[in-house]
Length: 425
Image (cartoon, rainbow, N blue to C red; front, side):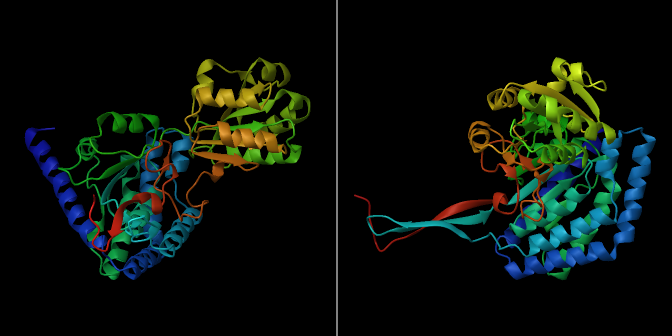
């Protein structure tokens, strides 16, 4: 890149930030009804422009296929009527959520008579950097708008046409509602240096960065960002079949957790099986996975019993496959399962299949992950499934937001103190 080109990109990015900051000032005080109108109008625009979105996605898919990209990546990139319907439903659900801005989350009166209230406020300007999933455009745009924030979206180069087509629908919704079009912007270039400008904060315009993608992207963001980050690390998720697990449930939940969509961050990557049910549960569960085309990588106990299994290496316990591959280990009890997760988990999502309340209590109390499930698939790790309408990511850190990041997590707060002339002695 020439110095002139670099200067031009820098000014383009700074201008995005300036416009987003101005829009955020308007959104912070926007009538809740105008945000509802914008989101419903955007949903209608996506429905009306479905063919345009599908055509744009077809361009992205052909380009990705020409690069020999993995099937898991192609699945994340692909749009179809069902996924477009889900985007539309997500926008409408988000639109109809209670408006978080100005909500009083706590209030109390001090002995001196002062009343203190904690009230939700928008974060300001949010930068979202994501890779292949075009639906993130709709989710992030809608959630940030509902929370009174402006957003700058930087999608991956592989989804550029899909992202632009969906973004055009969001802008149409903003305009119909009389809200600033700059409330939801996309970076107009696929130049990777644009990410660097966002990480440096766009001259103070960005209040927070949300990375949504692979481990390499998140690592770069965490290393280089000069603004706060909602970290969405890899989804190295686990399912544990306890000794009291019902066999039918163990089969159906594990199969869904791994194979429903192998490329999502909530897909189970490691299966742990209690040694007391190896004789009854292991073969049926593995047979169901193999029948769906899943490769099995097992410890010595598994490979001794399962002909299709290949030996797992130390690297397998540390790998988010995002593919039809699962690592399987036999453990002595719930304590060993918890210890394994403590060593290898990315603190995203872990599920236990059991009928034992004591095992559930240990699972919920002793595992330090953002989402813990009992007798349910790890693929429920999704903001839409939590009733949030969508998500901007699954935060695996511990500060401010954790788990699915929805409208409430995209707000900060301030304290309002009402007095009657009190002075401090």
